[in-house]
Length: 207
Image (cartoon, rainbow, N blue to C red; front, side, top):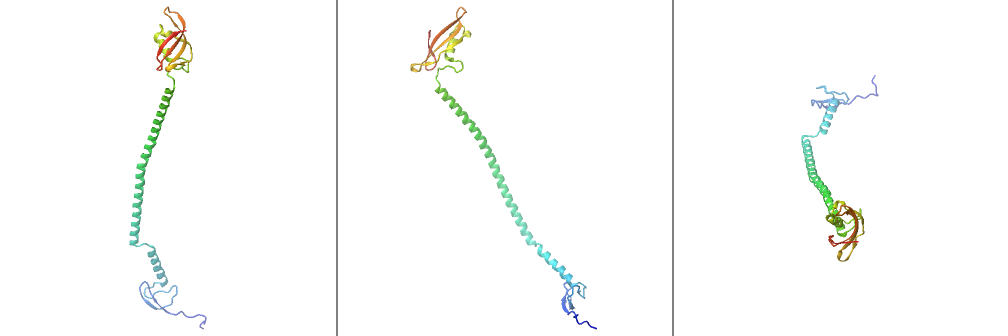
């Protein structure tokens, strides 16, 4: 008895993709095979589809050449950029070092000139004849005494008066000192010294 629920498969014309045989009685089933070469149509089609997809995803020779040229241009551009950066560093770093060193040296020279100028200004502002801040002595008078005493090594200052400035930029100072006399004994004396504007002793008088 024939089952009415089952319908026979209809025949169709199928060309084998492997050998090219035309099969008019193909059914289209999954495992339908070519009667000429035995290849299963669905598997051959799947294999060829996979090959086509692989070829589509693989770049052609022309595309590979273009990609290689693009990469080469990029590498050349990077080499140029690195070369320019290196050249700038070669120029900039020594230039910066030079300016740093020269700046420090110039600052030192400027400080030295400023210090010398300040010292010269203080010297110009200070009087030629003045009492020493340490012991009150006047070095021009002390030098004069040591050049004119009988025994310069015996000179010992006892008291110095403040320097008094007189007319015509002259100066006057009194000193009390002890020194050996012509007999070899020590004597205490007080003298007033007059000095001119250059600090030269111009007169000596006893008190």
